[in-house]
Image (cartoon, rainbow, N blue to C red; front, side, top):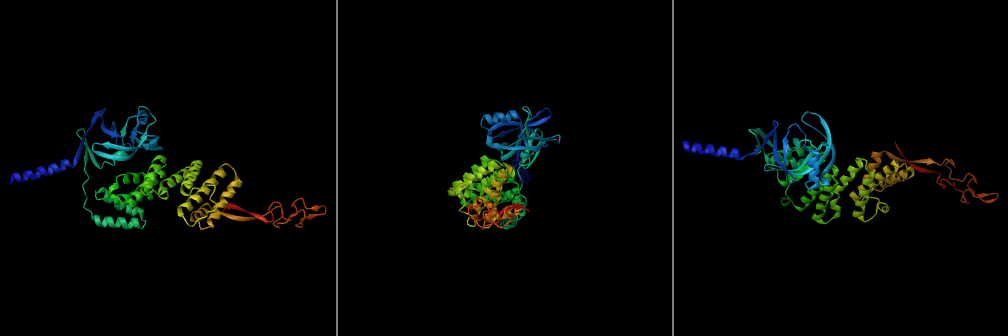
Length: 415
């Protein structure tokens, strides 16, 4: 009997040990350093729970860029992060495609590049919080495999799906998070979870979640959704390279160009929101060319109501052009673009209708100041003739030479 209980205890202890991973660290100046791999490059990071992001020095970043461990497409932009002393610093923000800590592989880890050449390399919270449960003991970082919490999986999944289907993204995200954290989430669950993350404004989390899905477990339509959402997420944060890359993945699934616009329309919105109107105009022009084979100046024959995406693109195009005209103080063209938006709104273009309401614009008739709104030539009083013959002001038409007999003009104004 004693041997039996000893065996049971050994098996239990063995299970506990197997559920843990021990990573040897080394002390340097009283601070632990831990071995990691970043995009295949072996590096040693200072273990720093006070840093909000993984951080590398400018020297390391330059080496990685020159040797292919980083690419220009991994550079997200600039941002702020906190360091161990609590201060906030501004750095270049990059995306680490893969980071390996022990046997744990993390995809798409946000990191900062210090402006200092010799800054320490820090393992911060952008990686640590994704390791699950861990502790430091006797010069080892001990990772504990997450234990499945007893939850009613079917009930949680049903609530998550119903909320997802009804467009209640915050509730769906919360329920799918429970499935993911307890290890019960399928690839389809993760796909819907990532979609909800994007809809609630967390693009980087969406990218991380969707990178954990397995294509072999998804149908063609689900894979299409996956790549469209990832492309949109990268477009939302302004990463043009990965946005276009995943748009291309979506395109390859069904060979249908109309299905590969999700990411680049998000990128278009990113340029617009950041007032990069020239980039927005060029991208919009390229999308319209790809979509219908026309240049952005040759769409007068299409007004709207047949294709929601095309409606959006055309209305957005005129909004971009209106802002470019305003910035260059070309007010005549500014008026023309606003009139185009209003005209589109009258032709069942829902996007244009929303723009008219959002921009608070309307057409107002202004009587001609030269003919006082009569539409008649003031020199011949509308007869077209003078004592010397044909009126030289209206060439005999009898119409006002400024409003051409229309009695005034329609002017777009903001209200």
